[in-house]
Structures are given as structure tokens and as C-alpha cells.
Length: 332
Image 1 (cartoon, helix red, strand yellow):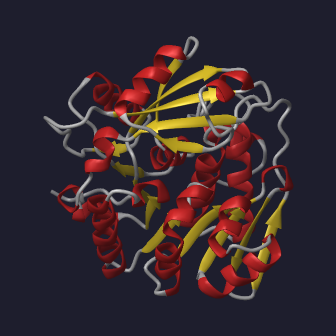
Image 2 (cartoon, helix red, strand yellow):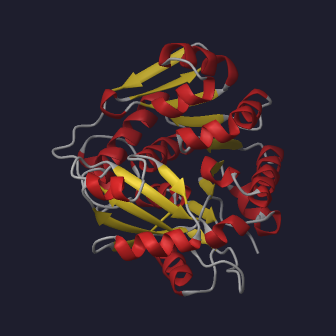
């Protein structure tokens, strides 16, 4: 059977987000690092879930959010990520397919439960994430759909998935398939602490050309090179073929060879929740990149998508991003 070509195929942790509002005192009581992502075990997940206030369950996962954003822009997106055949696994699969993303990774019939991320949103809109990876860690090379990867213009990996060795092998396999088909391979660094764990490996991916396009925010970039922003950016320009750096309210920039392009942040009436801002920025940029847009157009789409997502709770769009872009004069 012929596989319909995709714009982007994402590899990531298949997670259901549980989002709740919280005061900073709650974070202090439970020893949480505000604004960060902490990996937790199942027992800790149950304890935090029991102590949280009322929550909203929304399918998430960084790369999955990005694929949903691409679909909302009218792009063709697919996702590869592992769930268990339990209630949350069913919720995840239903939600991502309903959003228009191709998803056919077989669910595990035994082993750890489906992953969940317990997200506390403080009054300033900052999110603190406690992630139980569960079944998501069991993604393996056997789960790589070779035809789907070869069909996609871009293969995209979230850095969070670099923790489990089998998942790492799955991505390297996918990168090889993508490059053999003449496609682009992209990586998001995901989190400054993630970068701290795998700095040497991420740099190797860039320097050896396994990754063609890398996404980072300021903190991740400075963690990658263990220096200040300007010095880190100068190093990145030498190591990466293409790189995109987001800078929150300062906008974003893209560098490729001798070219540097910057755009301002898209205006937001009120910052509600920063969960998924980087994920949706990547969605806008990748959608434009797959369409062959220039760097400035890609950055502008990314900024618009990030602005939509931080204006409400949750990391999935609440309005069709294609229409939102068109209303603001952006090509999609």
C-alpha cells in the first residue's frame, strides 16, 4: 500500500498531561524546581497526583504537541510514540488521531503504564512539570515505521526521548532512513537539564551531521556550550547546519551558515500558561520549513503559534492555527 507523504514525522514521549493551577508554596512543600521538568517514578506520580488540586487531562508530549500544531496549520503530520493498552493510552491515541495526526504505533500489552506529566501552573503562568515516562520509555527500533519516515520531509525528535537507550536507537535508525531518502533530520533540545545530561552526545549529533536542524531556547543553548548567550550562539553557528533559538518575549532567531534572521515575539493580550510554547513554535517553523518558506516566514509562523498556546491553559491549540495565521496575514 502506498504511504501518503508527510510533511513531518515526530518521535517523542506519548504522554497525557494533567494540568492544575498551583501556588508557589505547593512547589516548595513538594520540593519542586519551578519552571523545570523532573522525571519521577510511579510512586511519586501517584503522590503528587493525590496532592494536586483539580486538574484537566489533555493528551500531550512535546513532539506530539508539535505534530498536532502542524496538523492545525493544515500540514501533514505523523507521530511515533509508545503507550500501554490502558485508559490513558486510549485517550492519547484517540486525541492525536482526532487532531489529524497519523498515529499507528502498537500499544504495549504489558509493562509500565502510559506516561503522564503532572503540570503545576503558578499565577505568573510558569509551568512546573513532573513526568512519569512509563510505557513511553519502551519505544524501540521495532516501532520505527520505515515507509512513514522515508515519506516525511522532516523527521523530528524531542530531546526528552534521549534518556532510554532503546528509544535513542530508534531515533538513530529513523535518522538513517530519513537521510537515505534525502530528507531533513531535526532535534529539539527540550530542557536545559536534559542538555546537561547529554551535552556531548547532542554536540556529536550536530557536528557529525546526524541532525540537520536544531531547536533550542536560551537556557538550553547556554547549557549546551556552558557559556553566555552570545558566545554560545557563535559556537552553534559553527556546529549546526540550521538552528533556531527562541527567546521568550525577546522573539526568536534562525541561523544557517552566515545568515542570521530575527523576528519579535507575537503580541499576547495575557500570558496564561507557558506549557507547550516551544512545542508550538517548532510546529510553526517546521510547517513553514516543509513548505519551503524562508527563515523569516518560518519564524513568524512559529511566533504566532507560540502566542496562541500561551494565551490559554494546555499545550494543544484551542483554535485552528491555519485560520489564525491567515487572519494575521501569514502564508500557510
